[in-house]
Structure formats: C-alpha cells, structure tokens
Image (cartoon, rainbow, N blue to C red; front, top):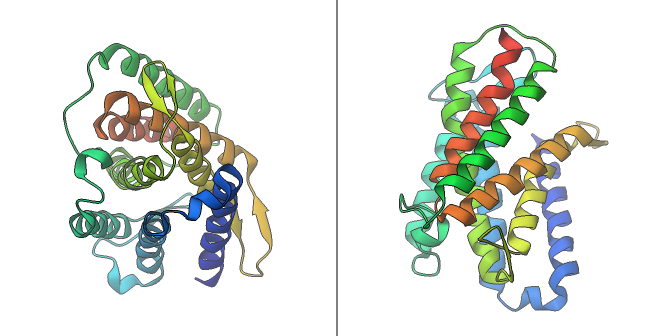
Length: 251
C-alpha cells in the first residue's frame, strides 16, 4: 500500500507545481478551494486503495483480468457515496449544478456531442482491435460499462473540474464549450494517475501510452462536460469507450 500512497503524493505534487506555474502565488488566494480540490482527490483514491488492500471492505470481491487489470466495484462505490456526502457538506460553496449532477443539457449539445462520442468510440475500437487478446469476461464488461464512468466522471469532470473553474475561471471557448485551465489540469491529473507510479522499491515508472491515452480521454470527457452542462454524456461516453477498448480483446 505504501507505493500507492507515495504515487498519489507524487501526482498531487506535480499537479500543485503545475497550478503554481499557471497562477503563481495567486493560486493560494483561495486556500479553502485548493484544500477541497486535493481533499477530494485523496478521498477518492484512498477509498479505492484501502478497499483494494483490505478484502473485508469488499462487499463485492475484487477480480483480476489477465493478471493485471483489477476491477473492484466496492472501492469505487465507496468513493461515489463519499463524494455525494461531501457535496452535501460543502454546499453552497459547490452546488450540484456546478458539479454537473443534472440531466438538463445545454442548448444545441446533441449534434456536436454525438460526433465527439462517435469519434471517441471509433478510436477506442481501433485501439482495442490492436491490443493483446484475453479471455472473455462478461463481469468485466458490465463493470466497465457502469462503474468507472460513474466514479471517475463524478470526481474528475465533476468535483475537481468545478473547483478549478472557481479557482481559475475559463477564459476561452472551444466549439461552444467554455474551456480553461481546469479542463487541462484535470486531464493531466487523470493521465498521471494512469501512467505514472512508484513500485515497492519506490522506483519511478512512466507508461507514456497510458499517460497519453488517459490525458486525451480526459480532455474529451471534460469538453463534453462543459459543452453539455452535465455529467450524463461524459458518463455514457466513458462507459462506451472502456467497453469498446476491451470487447475486441475478448473476441
């Protein structure tokens, strides 16, 4: 468990340095929001990490696909419940609409969002078709369709993006979506969590492909969140991407 904790601290430090580079001392002008940002980040990852390392916390036992992909419902469900409880505690500093917990979509979202989701799905399918094969696992596909999207979109494109938009308000528009440093920083953090880690001897590891793919996916999900005004489409897109990445590998 120690390597995971050090990896989380390393990624948090890298993101803090990036925020300082962007805003310099101004990033410290709202310490409560900055603390909330890193608090949500650690709360999410600690809930998942503790559950993965303590089998007694696993309401649904973890499973491993092909010896490397751990899929555990319980840790992510704990994270979702904790995030919802936290949202209740921090209101009105952070509203559910700011986090994206609404089914209302921005006007004119359907065509651009549909095109982006289709492009994302095609990309995931191509990557999946060119990845190593594995055994069919229907439980994994159900998990991928539901849980990562719910958990990760709520945290990264919901809480963390909303907090950073308050710290550094968006100043640009990209195809009718407000885009600022929040979109970039949360996507970089998402990439770091998938592609940077320390092992048991605290040796640094960098998976450039995972870092690249996760950062790009994070940017797409963040754009969808900002363009639609809701987490609904990013959650659906996330589940679709994950399923299409692994389904071809099982056929």
